[in-house]
Length: 338
Image (cartoon, rainbow, N blue to C red; front, side, top):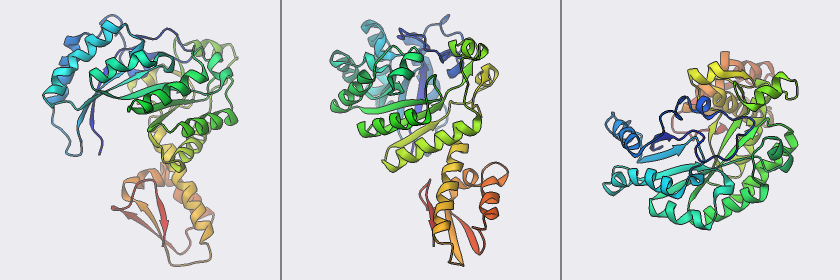
């Protein structure tokens, strides 16, 4: 069961680059944070707010997460200031751990002691790509080697490691994206997040788009790529914890182009489940009186918008003589025929 994650946004702070795709104020839905910087007091107010709200029974533990910037790129006193604000809650057992997001080139041996001292247990890295040309075109400002070294070092030091990947960056291709995914899988992060690139107002990518020097992914292509990557990571036992940006009114209002959909993740999972069902039904096509079993929690995703997956399977003749079962005890993202 997931923990309660209390999010603290430090938009752009610690970032030496302005990546071609980035506008953290829009991405996080927290505009105006530069005018009101995060202070120890606001960190504690946010924690108190969430701790005092009714908890879901399924929440297991509490984490405080510093998102939206490059945490380990902050000056050391600033890192300590923010982490120290969380420490009393950890000492009282009210918060279990801290997670931070950062750039791979801001992870090195001297980064580790502060993180360990203040109970940081999870570090998410904005890898985005492991292709040199793609990184260069996106103004990332770090190398492929730095990304690989950062994952290895964090794992060696006992951190839970997450990797963020983007689909549709300038100069990217399906082959390059799959190569990136395979190389990341070989490094064995604990989880990944997959984000399709969106053209946001005010970003460098918007200028490229309006000058016809960048073509964004269509929604169909973004979903197809998300499906490929999720399938690859699933096969390697690496959990995909996020597909697409968290939807918000501000994000929707600032998307100029690209594969934005408020239920992007569900569209990807729907495609994954459809392909699994099609494959297994084709293998057992000669049998009749079969049961096709899907996890009950995946029913909406499996059916897809307007029941499209069911219609496609029926059009292929794969549901003839098949009874559909949604099993509450079945593991998610699995398809079984019996």
